[in-house]
Each structure stands twice: as structure tokens, then as C-alpha cells.
Image (tube, rainbow, N blue to C red; front, side, top):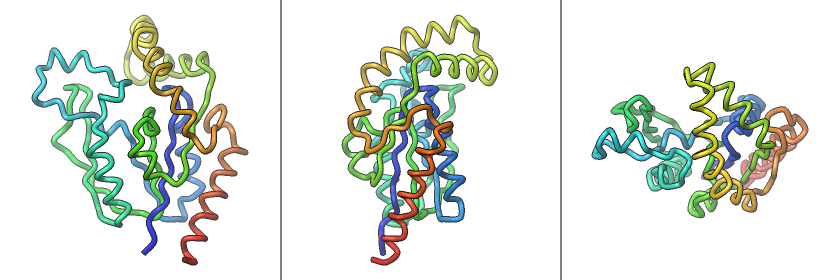
Amino acid sequence: MQKPVVIGVTGGSGSGKTSVTKAIYESLKDHSILVIEQDYYYRDQHNVPFEERLKTNYDHPLAFDNDLLIEHIEKLLRYEAIEKPVYDYSIHTRSDKVIPVEPKDVIILEGILVLEDERLRDLMDIKLYVDTDADLRIIRRLTRDIRERGRTFDSVIDQYLNVVRPMHNQFIEPTKRYADVIIPEGGQNHVAVDLMVTKIQTILEQKSFL
């Protein structure tokens, strides 16, 4: 039995990586495909006092439980089902709920730091970095956080300057060098998305003949 195709999609907050993921998913939905979001794999902090949880830096590599994520990807590669964790941001730790996930032929792994861990990179067939100018990323983040999350303008800007921007420069931007393909401007780059879909289809066809 051939292993599923694993595609890593990364980029900074507001870069459009989710749009790229959705575009690839929609173009391949006739195939067996699933999306695993790295955001679901923040560390379980039940044993950490709530006041300390409030200080969690969600843009730092140590915020993620990559050991569990790798374990789950390896199971999916063996066509075994997993139970994806659910993170509850209201209490800043993992929920008691899980989401059953069945294995598929294509796995899209999406998140800001999926290329930071060499162990994750080694599981990927294709690595994508969505590269968008910082001014567009902050505008998108402002719009999202104010409209969808009830944040104030000042709180979003403060978090961006003190956490998001330095973490991006230190940890996310450097992972660009590991990408097989760099996609400027996210899901709006239809040519790049179409090329990636064609490449994935070619890999799937090749695997079917092996």
C-alpha cells in the first residue's frame, strides 16, 4: 500500500496560508483529502495555573505539541484513524473533546510553524511557504481579530508589535528556506495554486501505478 501525500503549508499570520489550503482542497475534493491544522496541537496546559496560561505565546515553537502531531501524521501515513485534539482558547488549554479523523490519500498540514521542526519536514512530500508583505498581513489580522474575535484596535497592534512580529522574524520567516515552493500573496495567486494542484495530481497518479 502506498503512503498518502503530505503537503505542508506555512506562512506568517495573515499571509493567506488558509486561503491557499482551501483552494488546494477545493480543487482536489474529488480525491481523498483532509486538512490537519497545527493550531489544534497546542500543548495541553491543564497542569499549569490559569494565570500562567494567560501568558502563553502562541507564536513560539514551544507552544505546540509536535510530538503528538508527528505521532498522528505517522498514523495517518499508515492509514490508521486518529483523534485530533481540540484547543479551548477560553481556558487556554486543550479541551476534553476530540475529533475523529479518518485517513485519506492527501494530507494538508497547515500552520505557522509546520516547517520549523525537521521531523515534520521529513514527513512532507511538498513544502509550501505563503509569502505576503507585512503591511497586508497586519491589515488582515486587524480585520479578523476586530470583526471575528471582538478585539480592540490597540490590543491587536500591541500583540502584533510585542509578540507576532518578533516571533515571525525569529521563527517563521527563516523557515522559508525549507520550502519547495514560495507562493506570493496567498490564495489570490491562482497560477501558483493551479500549478501546485497539477503537481499533487501528478504525484497521486504516479503512486497509483506503483
